[in-house]
Image (cartoon, rainbow, N blue to C red):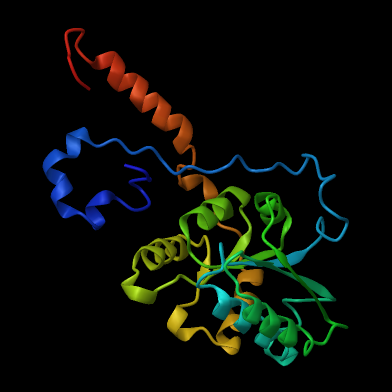
Length: 242
């Protein structure tokens, strides 16, 4: 089972798995190793090595509303608590390849309405060094896709997560709700995503101490290999299939 039983057990979505529980092996989650503070920062500019808010939505096919609400909130600086965002803060928007040219135009138009004496805004394509940017950002705002949340856990940064719930989707919400219960992120429901609610979540997330991230097993790649080796070792020599 690709996951951690102490986080979300398979039985929570598939109760009948109890019939073969003895055969289940949990691998843990697969993440890239966290980039340590002493690592190579040469690929990042001086700006990127400081505090910034990082907004992402994977490929961007369903993340336009999230980007839009963030920019609308920034256009109303009174929504933010001064104690949470002191000084001129950089908000970096990573636009996925599925963001249309019209959507990019609309985001650029919203960016022009922002008070640039207080907020610096960068609109740019998604980057291969996303995990490193997360490691150094002050706050991440994103959807609740698997890869994004695993990168968040590896980075250990403060996070506001807006899980995708369209077309009957429940996976992102279930995962995000569990992370929120553990104090690993702050969730805003997609149906409740407004500039005001988003700004409130940002202020709370910036003031909340980081939770202990070690309670989740994120070493799934190595554990998968260990499990396979163990099962192969235990297999009878005269077995004809595995």
